[in-house]
Image 1: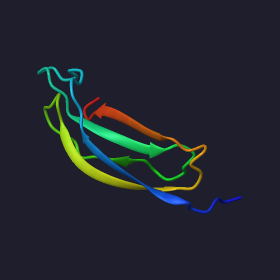
Image 2 (image 1 turned 135 degrees about the horizontal axis):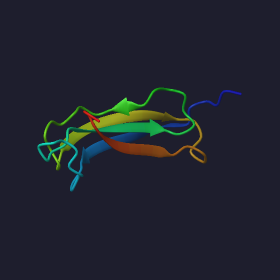
Image 3 (image 1 turned 120 degrees about the horizontal axis):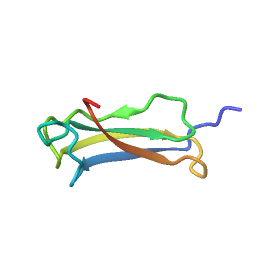
Image 4 (image 1 turned 180 degrees about the vertical axis):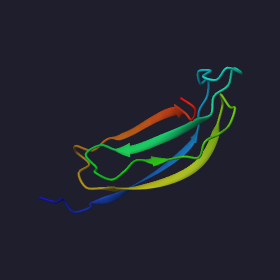
Length: 82
């Protein structure tokens, strides 16, 4: 049974600090992947911040919530080149 949307989760990815160095030059090219668990839609991504271990994104995303009891927000930081 398809659940009807019950609300919208508004997420603002502000930034990150003390990221691990992933590049040979001692930097990273980080981006954040966001996903609501239990959601079949593809995840959302921030832009890639080149050569930064302290990136600032200030990017906003909206997710449609269907079941707040079972859904959770997953945030993962990746290095673009990895």
